[in-house]
Image (cartoon, rainbow, N blue to C red; front, side, top):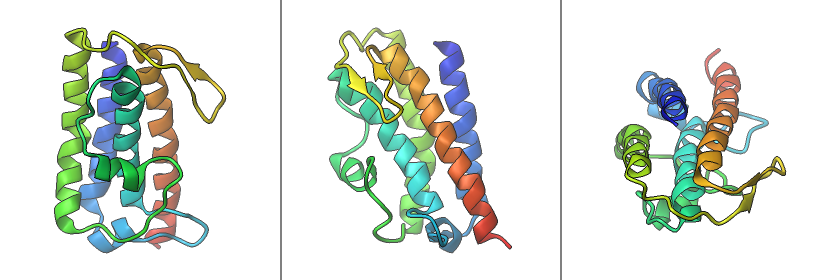
Length: 153
């Protein structure tokens, strides 16, 4: 699983660059034809990873229910993020994956509640969830890269 965690961290480093390089206004912009902002897409991947890996394993998540409620599947950008929220997200991008790897290595994920994702694949264990999460994060990186062209002329 080390390779899977390495892939996640590399993707998170790319996402982090958007949080560093883009203005707060750019991060909060919902371009025409999109439902969500770059900020929403980035925090959504953090929330989804926590749901897929922790919640479905019956292990307490590393984030609060307020973030889950606001950024889970089916939500959309309701308001702009503050600079404080962006700074917090910069930390969450890495701390959640680093802790997940520690928890995985410590054997904390001993059970898993099977879950069928939107691609119709059924996840049956935490390893499948971690691998699927990388696919999911790649989809949202793709959205962000497309949105970038709408935000920066």
